[in-house]
Image (tube, rainbow, N blue to C red):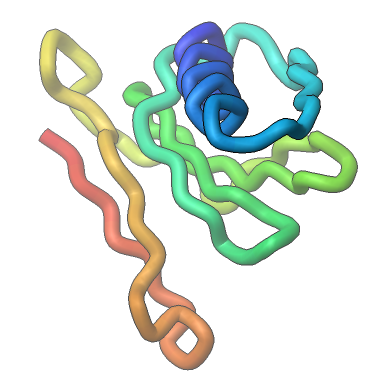
Length: 102
């Protein structure tokens, strides 16, 4: 979770350098392990992966996390594990996500 907060904080600081807007940081979950991949599904949801094999959806309006699928069996050791996630460029029609793992 601390990695997700670091990423979000970095984004907020970067954005704040170019805009006069105020941002609020909220702790949404603990003990998720290492959040590795993040992508926006749409304006209301994000998809997150954890190195241990979890695929989660974050509802941005409620800040609630829920599993998208069951835990994926990956070799979570050293550099191994579930890594990045990316929404398909044709997501509106094919509803596909791409995952990387090692």
